[in-house]
Length: 299
Image 1 (cartoon, helix red, strand yellow):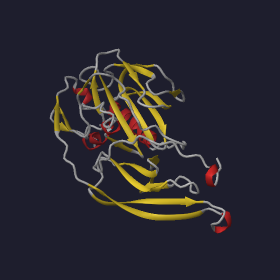
Image 2 (cartoon, rainbow, N blue to C red):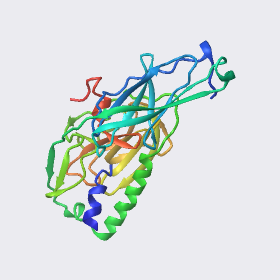
Image 3 (spheres, rainbow, N blue to C red):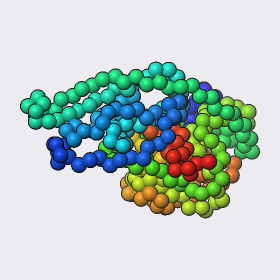
Protein backbone atom coordinates (compact mmCIF):
# COMPACT_ATOMS: atom_id res chain seq x y z
CA UNK A 1 0.00 0.00 0.00
CA UNK A 2 2.88 2.34 0.81
CA UNK A 3 4.32 1.89 -2.70
CA UNK A 4 0.93 2.72 -4.25
CA UNK A 5 0.55 5.84 -2.12
CA UNK A 6 4.04 7.32 -2.46
CA UNK A 7 3.87 8.44 -6.13
CA UNK A 8 0.80 10.52 -5.26
CA UNK A 9 2.67 12.33 -2.52
CA UNK A 10 5.71 13.65 -4.33
CA UNK A 11 4.35 17.06 -5.30
CA UNK A 12 4.31 18.01 -1.64
CA UNK A 13 4.61 20.69 -3.39
CA UNK A 14 -19.48 45.96 -4.69
CA UNK A 15 -22.17 46.90 -6.71
CA UNK A 16 -21.75 47.33 -10.46
CA UNK A 17 -21.68 50.92 -11.78
CA UNK A 18 -23.47 51.34 -15.07
CA UNK A 19 -22.52 52.98 -18.33
CA UNK A 20 -19.62 55.43 -18.41
CA UNK A 21 -19.50 55.52 -14.60
CA UNK A 22 -18.08 51.99 -14.41
CA UNK A 23 -14.29 52.11 -13.90
CA UNK A 24 -12.13 50.20 -16.33
CA UNK A 25 -10.65 47.00 -14.89
CA UNK A 26 -6.91 46.89 -14.30
CA UNK A 27 -5.05 45.60 -17.36
CA UNK A 28 -3.01 42.48 -16.66
CA UNK A 29 0.35 41.31 -17.93
CA UNK A 30 -0.54 37.69 -18.55
CA UNK A 31 1.63 34.56 -18.45
CA UNK A 32 2.80 32.99 -21.69
CA UNK A 33 0.14 30.93 -23.47
CA UNK A 34 0.93 27.19 -23.33
CA UNK A 35 -2.10 24.94 -23.74
CA UNK A 36 -0.33 21.73 -22.68
CA UNK A 37 -0.43 19.57 -19.54
CA UNK A 38 1.19 21.65 -16.81
CA UNK A 39 0.69 24.82 -18.83
CA UNK A 40 -1.63 27.82 -18.91
CA UNK A 41 -4.29 28.32 -21.58
CA UNK A 42 -5.25 31.91 -22.40
CA UNK A 43 -8.80 31.88 -23.77
CA UNK A 44 -10.30 35.15 -25.10
CA UNK A 45 -13.85 35.75 -23.90
CA UNK A 46 -14.74 39.02 -25.60
CA UNK A 47 -14.29 42.78 -25.24
CA UNK A 48 -14.50 44.66 -21.97
CA UNK A 49 -17.76 46.62 -22.23
CA UNK A 50 -18.91 49.53 -20.03
CA UNK A 51 -22.32 47.90 -19.45
CA UNK A 52 -21.04 44.45 -18.52
CA UNK A 53 -19.49 43.01 -15.40
CA UNK A 54 -16.53 40.67 -15.21
CA UNK A 55 -17.42 37.27 -16.67
CA UNK A 56 -16.96 34.07 -14.71
CA UNK A 57 -15.73 30.70 -15.96
CA UNK A 58 -15.14 27.16 -14.76
CA UNK A 59 -13.06 24.22 -15.93
CA UNK A 60 -15.00 21.30 -14.58
CA UNK A 61 -15.96 22.34 -11.06
CA UNK A 62 -13.01 24.73 -10.63
CA UNK A 63 -13.54 28.45 -11.09
CA UNK A 64 -10.77 30.05 -13.16
CA UNK A 65 -9.02 33.41 -13.15
CA UNK A 66 -10.45 36.10 -15.45
CA UNK A 67 -8.23 39.05 -16.38
CA UNK A 68 -8.54 42.10 -18.61
CA UNK A 69 -5.84 42.52 -21.27
CA UNK A 70 -5.79 45.03 -24.11
CA UNK A 71 -9.49 45.79 -23.79
CA UNK A 72 -10.66 42.18 -23.72
CA UNK A 73 -11.51 39.58 -21.10
CA UNK A 74 -9.25 36.54 -20.99
CA UNK A 75 -9.68 33.30 -19.06
CA UNK A 76 -6.33 32.29 -17.55
CA UNK A 77 -6.72 28.54 -17.12
CA UNK A 78 -4.31 26.28 -15.26
CA UNK A 79 -3.91 22.82 -16.82
CA UNK A 80 -2.86 19.98 -14.52
CA UNK A 81 0.02 17.71 -15.54
CA UNK A 82 -2.37 14.77 -15.76
CA UNK A 83 -4.96 16.46 -17.99
CA UNK A 84 -5.67 14.47 -21.14
CA UNK A 85 -4.71 16.07 -24.48
CA UNK A 86 -7.69 16.84 -26.71
CA UNK A 87 -10.75 19.06 -26.67
CA UNK A 88 -11.92 20.46 -23.34
CA UNK A 89 -14.73 22.88 -22.57
CA UNK A 90 -14.76 25.99 -20.46
CA UNK A 91 -18.12 26.94 -18.97
CA UNK A 92 -18.40 30.72 -19.32
CA UNK A 93 -20.98 33.02 -17.78
CA UNK A 94 -21.18 36.49 -19.33
CA UNK A 95 -23.28 38.91 -17.27
CA UNK A 96 -24.60 42.21 -18.61
CA UNK A 97 -26.63 44.78 -16.73
CA UNK A 98 -28.14 47.82 -18.45
CA UNK A 99 -31.23 49.88 -17.91
CA UNK A 100 -32.49 48.95 -21.35
CA UNK A 101 -32.12 45.22 -20.93
CA UNK A 102 -34.71 43.24 -19.02
CA UNK A 103 -35.83 46.39 -17.22
CA UNK A 104 -32.45 46.86 -15.59
CA UNK A 105 -32.16 43.27 -14.37
CA UNK A 106 -28.98 41.27 -14.88
CA UNK A 107 -29.07 38.96 -17.90
CA UNK A 108 -26.95 35.80 -17.64
CA UNK A 109 -25.60 34.14 -20.76
CA UNK A 110 -23.84 30.84 -20.10
CA UNK A 111 -22.06 28.93 -22.86
CA UNK A 112 -19.51 26.16 -23.31
CA UNK A 113 -16.34 27.31 -25.01
CA UNK A 114 -14.17 24.51 -26.49
CA UNK A 115 -10.38 24.72 -26.46
CA UNK A 116 -7.56 22.32 -27.27
CA UNK A 117 -4.93 20.87 -24.96
CA UNK A 118 -1.88 19.65 -26.88
CA UNK A 119 0.37 16.75 -25.87
CA UNK A 120 3.78 17.46 -24.35
CA UNK A 121 6.62 15.08 -23.50
CA UNK A 122 8.73 15.93 -20.46
CA UNK A 123 12.27 14.55 -19.92
CA UNK A 124 13.40 12.16 -17.19
CA UNK A 125 15.61 12.88 -14.19
CA UNK A 126 17.26 10.27 -11.94
CA UNK A 127 18.18 11.34 -8.42
CA UNK A 128 20.16 9.42 -5.80
CA UNK A 129 19.44 10.15 -2.15
CA UNK A 130 21.84 8.91 0.54
CA UNK A 131 19.05 9.09 3.13
CA UNK A 132 16.84 6.20 1.99
CA UNK A 133 14.27 7.10 4.67
CA UNK A 134 13.17 9.94 2.38
CA UNK A 135 12.31 7.35 -0.30
CA UNK A 136 11.20 4.27 1.64
CA UNK A 137 8.98 5.77 4.32
CA UNK A 138 8.29 4.25 7.71
CA UNK A 139 4.68 3.77 8.78
CA UNK A 140 4.80 6.88 10.97
CA UNK A 141 6.39 9.00 8.23
CA UNK A 142 3.84 7.75 5.72
CA UNK A 143 0.98 8.70 8.06
CA UNK A 144 2.50 12.16 8.45
CA UNK A 145 2.89 12.61 4.70
CA UNK A 146 -0.68 11.51 4.00
CA UNK A 147 -1.97 14.07 6.49
CA UNK A 148 0.18 16.78 4.94
CA UNK A 149 -1.05 15.83 1.49
CA UNK A 150 -4.66 16.32 2.60
CA UNK A 151 -3.76 19.75 3.98
CA UNK A 152 -1.96 20.79 0.80
CA UNK A 153 -4.81 19.56 -1.40
CA UNK A 154 -7.17 21.76 0.59
CA UNK A 155 -4.82 24.75 0.25
CA UNK A 156 -4.55 24.18 -3.51
CA UNK A 157 -8.31 24.62 -3.83
CA UNK A 158 -8.36 27.93 -1.95
CA UNK A 159 -10.22 30.77 -3.69
CA UNK A 160 -10.32 34.43 -2.67
CA UNK A 161 -12.19 36.93 -4.82
CA UNK A 162 -10.16 40.02 -5.70
CA UNK A 163 -10.79 42.89 -8.11
CA UNK A 164 -7.55 42.17 -9.95
CA UNK A 165 -4.70 39.68 -9.66
CA UNK A 166 -1.04 40.47 -10.27
CA UNK A 167 0.17 37.87 -12.79
CA UNK A 168 3.33 39.81 -13.68
CA UNK A 169 5.71 37.74 -11.56
CA UNK A 170 9.33 38.28 -10.63
CA UNK A 171 11.76 35.47 -9.83
CA UNK A 172 11.67 34.84 -6.07
CA UNK A 173 15.45 34.38 -5.87
CA UNK A 174 18.50 34.98 -8.01
CA UNK A 175 20.55 31.90 -8.80
CA UNK A 176 21.22 29.14 -11.27
CA UNK A 177 17.96 27.71 -12.50
CA UNK A 178 18.17 23.92 -12.31
CA UNK A 179 15.28 21.49 -11.85
CA UNK A 180 12.72 22.19 -14.55
CA UNK A 181 8.98 21.80 -14.30
CA UNK A 182 7.34 18.55 -15.43
CA UNK A 183 10.46 16.37 -15.37
CA UNK A 184 9.60 12.72 -14.69
CA UNK A 185 11.65 11.83 -11.61
CA UNK A 186 13.17 8.62 -10.29
CA UNK A 187 14.49 8.57 -6.72
CA UNK A 188 17.03 5.80 -6.12
CA UNK A 189 15.67 4.12 -9.22
CA UNK A 190 12.01 4.25 -8.15
CA UNK A 191 9.48 6.29 -10.18
CA UNK A 192 7.82 9.23 -8.46
CA UNK A 193 5.42 11.94 -9.55
CA UNK A 194 6.70 14.59 -12.02
CA UNK A 195 8.57 17.58 -10.69
CA UNK A 196 5.75 20.08 -10.20
CA UNK A 197 7.88 23.16 -9.64
CA UNK A 198 10.98 25.08 -10.66
CA UNK A 199 14.28 24.86 -8.77
CA UNK A 200 16.75 27.69 -8.24
CA UNK A 201 20.15 26.66 -6.88
CA UNK A 202 21.19 29.12 -4.18
CA UNK A 203 23.33 28.96 -1.07
CA UNK A 204 21.72 28.64 2.32
CA UNK A 205 20.51 31.97 3.71
CA UNK A 206 19.69 33.77 0.44
CA UNK A 207 16.63 36.03 0.65
CA UNK A 208 13.49 34.57 -0.94
CA UNK A 209 10.98 37.17 -2.14
CA UNK A 210 7.26 37.11 -2.94
CA UNK A 211 6.86 36.86 -6.72
CA UNK A 212 3.82 39.18 -6.59
CA UNK A 213 1.65 40.96 -4.07
CA UNK A 214 -0.67 38.75 -2.06
CA UNK A 215 -1.64 37.39 1.32
CA UNK A 216 0.24 34.62 3.11
CA UNK A 217 -2.01 31.57 2.99
CA UNK A 218 0.06 29.17 5.10
CA UNK A 219 3.46 28.74 6.75
CA UNK A 220 4.40 25.18 7.70
CA UNK A 221 7.11 22.50 7.81
CA UNK A 222 6.40 19.45 5.61
CA UNK A 223 8.16 16.09 5.36
CA UNK A 224 9.05 16.43 1.67
CA UNK A 225 8.82 20.18 1.06
CA UNK A 226 10.45 21.24 4.32
CA UNK A 227 9.78 24.74 5.61
CA UNK A 228 7.26 26.21 3.18
CA UNK A 229 5.37 29.45 2.59
CA UNK A 230 2.26 29.71 0.40
CA UNK A 231 1.10 33.12 -0.86
CA UNK A 232 -2.44 33.66 -2.18
CA UNK A 233 -2.53 36.20 -5.03
CA UNK A 234 -6.31 36.04 -5.41
CA UNK A 235 -8.76 34.39 -7.79
CA UNK A 236 -7.19 30.93 -7.55
CA UNK A 237 -3.54 31.94 -8.13
CA UNK A 238 -1.14 30.74 -5.41
CA UNK A 239 2.66 30.57 -5.19
CA UNK A 240 4.61 28.15 -3.00
CA UNK A 241 8.21 28.41 -1.75
CA UNK A 242 9.81 25.23 -0.38
CA UNK A 243 12.96 23.92 1.39
CA UNK A 244 13.41 27.22 3.25
CA UNK A 245 15.88 27.56 6.09
CA UNK A 246 13.35 29.78 7.83
CA UNK A 247 10.39 32.01 7.03
CA UNK A 248 9.95 35.67 7.97
CA UNK A 249 6.17 35.99 7.51
CA UNK A 250 3.04 34.68 9.18
CA UNK A 251 -0.26 33.33 7.83
CA UNK A 252 -2.68 36.15 7.02
CA UNK A 253 0.07 38.73 6.48
CA UNK A 254 -0.22 40.91 3.36
CA UNK A 255 3.01 40.98 1.35
CA UNK A 256 4.21 43.20 -1.48
CA UNK A 257 5.90 42.04 -4.66
CA UNK A 258 9.58 41.63 -3.91
CA UNK A 259 9.10 41.53 -0.13
CA UNK A 260 11.28 39.01 1.69
CA UNK A 261 9.28 36.04 2.96
CA UNK A 262 12.15 33.81 4.10
CA UNK A 263 15.64 32.50 3.50
CA UNK A 264 16.71 29.60 1.30
CA UNK A 265 17.83 26.30 2.78
CA UNK A 266 17.59 22.54 2.30
CA UNK A 267 14.86 21.47 4.73
CA UNK A 268 12.69 18.50 3.81
CA UNK A 269 13.76 16.16 1.00
CA UNK A 270 16.61 17.97 -0.74
CA UNK A 271 20.05 17.01 -2.04
CA UNK A 272 21.45 20.50 -1.44
CA UNK A 273 20.39 24.08 -0.67
CA UNK A 274 17.95 25.43 -3.24
CA UNK A 275 14.55 27.03 -3.64
CA UNK A 276 11.72 24.93 -5.03
CA UNK A 277 9.12 27.34 -6.43
CA UNK A 278 5.64 26.19 -7.42
CA UNK A 279 2.64 28.00 -8.89
CA UNK A 280 -0.94 26.81 -8.46
CA UNK A 281 -3.71 28.07 -10.75
CA UNK A 282 -7.34 26.96 -10.28
CA UNK A 283 -6.06 24.00 -8.26
CA UNK A 284 -3.52 22.86 -10.88
CA UNK A 285 0.25 22.94 -10.44
CA UNK A 286 1.54 24.77 -13.52
CA UNK A 287 4.91 25.80 -14.93
CA UNK A 288 6.18 28.88 -13.03
CA UNK A 289 8.43 29.86 -15.96
CA UNK A 290 5.34 30.87 -17.94
CA UNK A 291 4.78 33.74 -15.48
CA UNK A 292 8.23 35.25 -16.03
CA UNK A 293 8.83 34.21 -19.67
CA UNK A 294 7.52 37.44 -21.20
CA UNK A 295 9.80 39.54 -19.03
CA UNK A 296 12.82 37.48 -20.07
CA UNK A 297 13.68 36.50 -16.48
CA UNK A 298 13.50 32.73 -17.06
CA UNK A 299 16.38 31.27 -18.99
